[in-house]
Image 1 (cartoon, rainbow, N blue to C red):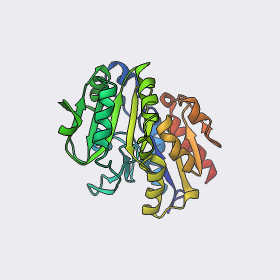
Image 2: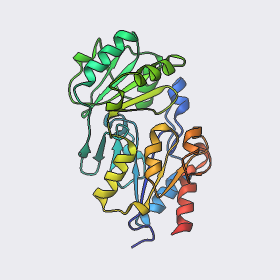
Image 3: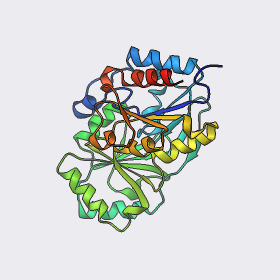
Image 4: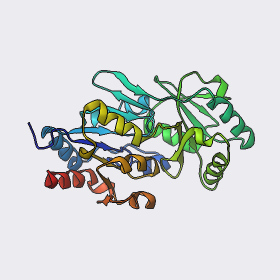
Length: 281
């Protein structure tokens, strides 16, 4: 028995647990979880808490990291398209894209030729269409191989998510293009960084999957705490009993009602969150 029995933390990984923005922009080595955060996370779990990661990363991108992160709960993957139990080696819940996505992406590429994207699946395969410098740096960040294809029809099923990769101003043009399409409401379309735009199935977001995870674990929503830094984290932060953000979070995250903004990701934001919960319980 511990003071955190029946308490769940769901935290974003990139730029929340560990600052990875520099790697995405220019390459380099992925920084490890800081000792300050590591000790706090281990303390939380030793006191009975369940620590889960809720990430936009796909299974093959996150699997090499999982053993290096102190966590004892299932992981929310693909920006909310699945819950995966690394201890059991299986999916607990999935919400992958409908086959209609192929026609929508095909039309997008006709209207905006050259848009770069990665396409993820439920296995360890990743495919890229029109890969660019961001694609290369992102794959360096995830340490994963990819297969370049000419069009969406060559991609196998099922598709878990599509990740668009563009610099400004093209990223804004892409966001505006998708928003104008009749099919936009059929999906969750949200930035995960200024360079990455995530597309998942309707309802497949971090908020819905955190709620599903709490149900699977038998945890009351009033004992669910979440932390994140970007737009794709907002549904999860709104679901949390108390939401937290590192100081490097974007402005809309800091404007979530009731959110507590802590130190920069580089300065032990996760440890600061757990310290607050330690005082609360």
